[in-house]
Image (spheres, rainbow, N blue to C red):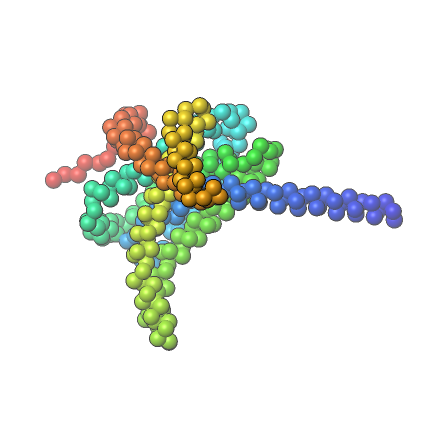
Length: 326
């Protein structure tokens, strides 16, 4: 009997340790995931664009298909690569992080440049033209999953860099949980966003109470602004996070040309307001990181379009756009 009680005590102790370990894994996954906020916001802001031109009945199935592709990207492809890099080439991770940060800057700057060049012009006609293509859904889903792969690679790299040094299985579990949490968050938000206008229309048309109908009409009116706001927030987040990654990456290898003045400006702003004004320091640093990200991205646009893309096409790594006849 004494032996059985001792065994039960041992099992209980092991269960407590296991539970504590699970709590630690989840806590580290959540904490590390927060570091990838910029890429996550951009992922949620970009995806609804792939759903334009479809009937309401196809929106959620398409979101589900893209979400499954995202989980496959993160868990089947990127997770093993991340673990192999950490095990055998950890010095490569900061370099990949900086490359990913530079890519975010490029993407954000390209969106700003595109908006500046096409301000005042909508793309409703383009959507209407594409909507008649019977292969549009398959093309859009594939395009969304490819875009997700790039953003997921950045997210997984940021999460990996934010995790503390730990065992292989702790890191693997933390990365997997972070990948699932982020995917659920992103595509859950996307599903809500793309169906909000349909819910609003239904409330406006079928609501029994005047208040319900008014709320429905309000949702329909506000959704275009919400989508525009998400695009702006996503672009700003890309530039801020991308710029911060590059600045801190350069600081990590001893190049403080950007980091030192940014840090000095943030500290000066904090001291000018209040020595305890940590938010002011963060806001100034984020703003300056974002400005640097925009400038870096603008420099990278001609490099990418005039050198990298043509070289990739020459090597067969990118498709050459089809020429249309007159």
